[in-house]
Image (cartoon, rainbow, N blue to C red; front, side, top):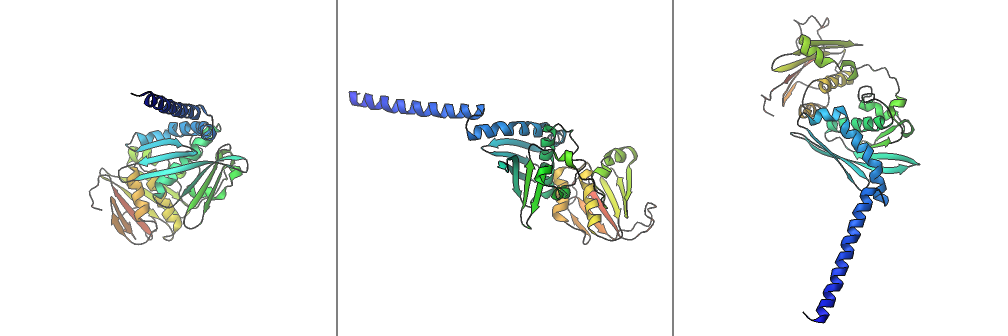
Length: 304
């Protein structure tokens, strides 16, 4: 090798050594919290840890649902994977009016799963602000989030196409819950439904004009629900029951995706829905009109 080639080899070797050193210093600085994204990473790490440690998240992970979180620059990314669902939500770290904020723009795809992840993220931030787990998930319906402002912990905006969510990292929504009177059955109203179904084989509940009767069979659940009309309160009550039952996330999502409102009788997936069901033999219903029956097969015996 000529002297000139040796010099060029030395120079290029020195350049690559400098490049590798710079990369190494950059990575070290990033993980130690130096630089713009390194500092943001340090802000997001406690939120990521709190989210992953929630009991609600752990229960889903234990039922063969994959929920992973990662930090990429100024984003906290939640990835969700189940049998028929693959979803990724990118929560962006921002400073708005001096407030540390997680921002998310999303649409109606996989609405059930999206709402679950959002409520758990709000729950995680609430826990970081010294509140107990469950104060958000059990007391707040997703639609209630429209009633709050960022100063109160959350701001949710809907423009008929996309929804925008702003979560105040330094203020727990649990500190500012608005007590509301709902005319439909909420998840919180029937949170013990599975205990009764296991112990007694049935569950009964009524609220205002809504009557609910659920039967636990070996191979299916039978939900009977009645209101004065087939209105939105009846549908939202039915949706609360679907959420509350011990069903896998795919089955829950299938209901809202395939039956977004009460219309006609319909069959799909594991569901058989009968509008105007015959409840002549059921003493739980004094008035026999306006009853919807939803049968949910525990084993997937129907074709999609």
